[in-house]
Length: 380
Image 1 (cartoon, rainbow, N blue to C red):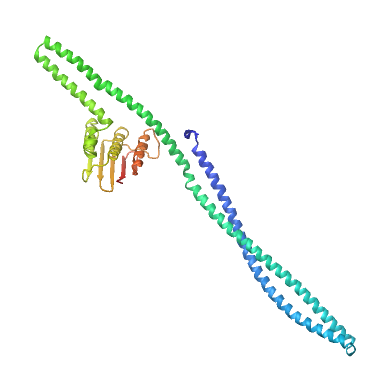
Image 2 (cartoon, rainbow, N blue to C red):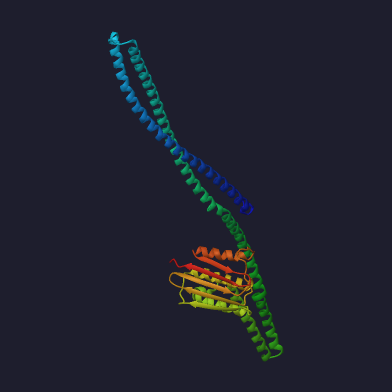
């Protein structure tokens, strides 16, 4: 699926629904856990009462068993000496023994019921406790899922948007390369190529002037020809400098920047550029010097072309740990949250900085200029 066709807002809506559903499930599980805790407390109190009743029933059973043994012994004695007792005494001994036997039997039945109820409550408590533990575990897992949804996955839309921008940036790079080739072609055609053609024409003219007008007029034409050649040479060098300043390899970043900013200031006469280098002029690895030069070049060109600045300040500081660059202008500024066509230049700057594991921050307000801060760690 093409990134361009992917609707990031739809993804945010889906993630929002997922978060809502997971949140509802979490609340439901929490309510189940709370109900289980209440049931656990109720069962615990009931178990306590049942255990107390079991003890009482056992004590009562022991008492009844003793009375029953005594009543049986009394009934046996009455039965053996039946003639020595009255009918009422015999009936009373029989009824007491029978009643005690019935009470003991009911006591044993109640004890069994209480014991069964106790065992059932203990089993239920184990089950409820397990449910509470599982509910707590599920809540913790759901909390992790929600945090994941609300942080990492919720940023997926932003990541896709960033990927979409990078895709567009890649297309812009290809387009910019073609535009750069066209520009170079036009500059060479309109500049050095035209001048060289004029040189050829003027050289023929010098020969004719020498023959027709004499030496002095020929020398004047030669001087004009030298000016033309010098201009052509300047244009060629300027084109080469824009492609890659050779001074960057020979002299290093600081001298090249000085020369570039001075030349830019002279070319754009309405813009004053101030350059401050803090510390010593230290040579850096080639990839660092090229990247820093291009970053500063891009920031300065943005300040001139888009911000229409009258003053630009460039400050460079190189120490053992890092390189810090500040580019400040008094231009018209822009809304950093608004994406425009020229923002691809900023994306390119961020790409360069990220490749060097550095940081790029841009602070701009409409009507109050722009400050670009670049920090590159020196990990070598």
